[in-house]
Picture 1 (tube, rainbow, N blue to C red):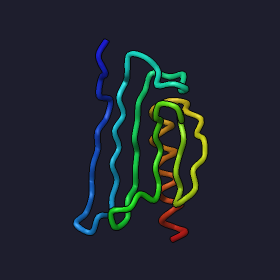
Picture 2 (spheres, rainbow, N blue to C red):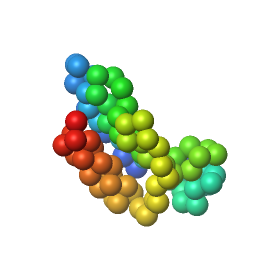
Picture 3 (cartoon, helix red, strand yellow):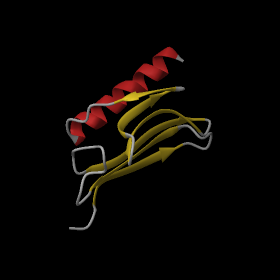
Length: 95
């Protein structure tokens, strides 16, 4: 099985603020993640990532909020996107 694109969305304004979401279904989990999805969801302001969810080899599922990074418990793609949007809204309300 090849990697299959599940969703790709990008909306970045001229000032460098916006969202980008990319989710792939992959043939094998990206260690140490146990699921078969590879993802990168990011909210940027002035070209700088301020909220992000991703899973990378060696780190697994985690999220970024400002300068903080913490682990993230992946449930499914719908929940991932909902959690990401919720964190973006939280960022906007606090900053």
